[in-house]
Image (cartoon, helix red, strand yellow):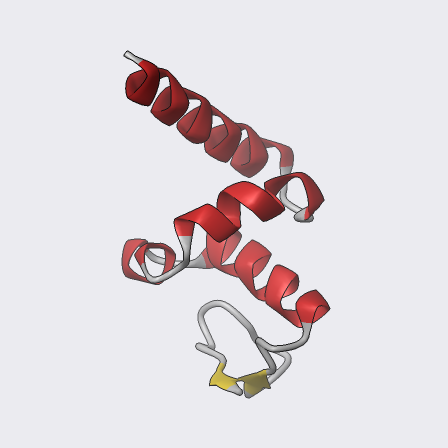
Length: 77
């Protein structure tokens, strides 16, 4: 269980990150409402893998898709 930061989650005190649904939901909440330090604490490979399945606002989704696309381009060069 992870204690939910109230700036990210208002409805729960704890999140069970071993539950796949709650984990995806938590990542979506952090990407949408988290601070830089909250986002930095996430697993970037997991974000990349789960991105197509995350429920994100369109602007946030485009930001992350662009980030990983640019990262892939930079790595290929």
